[in-house]
Length: 149
Image (cartoon, rainbow, N blue to C red; front, side, top):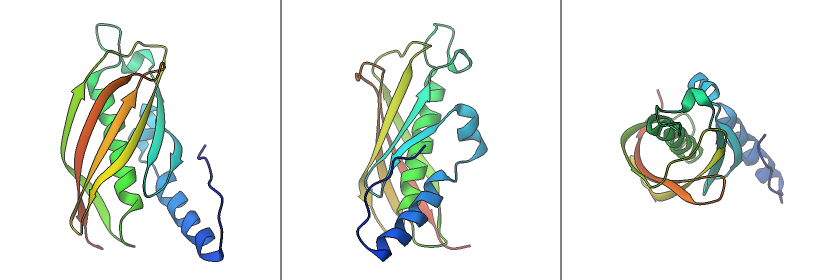
């Protein structure tokens, strides 16, 4: 479920509906992963992910690849919310620092914010926090803007 923000005018209603449609159009992979959109705007996208056994590694914690997939979806969603009408986006670079293990049976929360929004590329920072609010991973990714096809 996406949290809503108060609107002030007719143009805000239309823009909010457009942003909601973009944000909620999640690929099948994100749904399979268990990605849950919590809140979205052009300035910040927040999502959660339950750390189920299927996403774990042999040490009984959240797999690094699952963290990267979660962050990549957050960054792609954030970039999509900032695109011109008809344009698309794709990840061209992603870097992650894993800072602490996240045990299976908990939930992580990711927050993605823009570092740069240019004409052809944008750079996004996603912070992934564990259930206690501690920083578990920091991801920075670059998204390429693909013109209207």
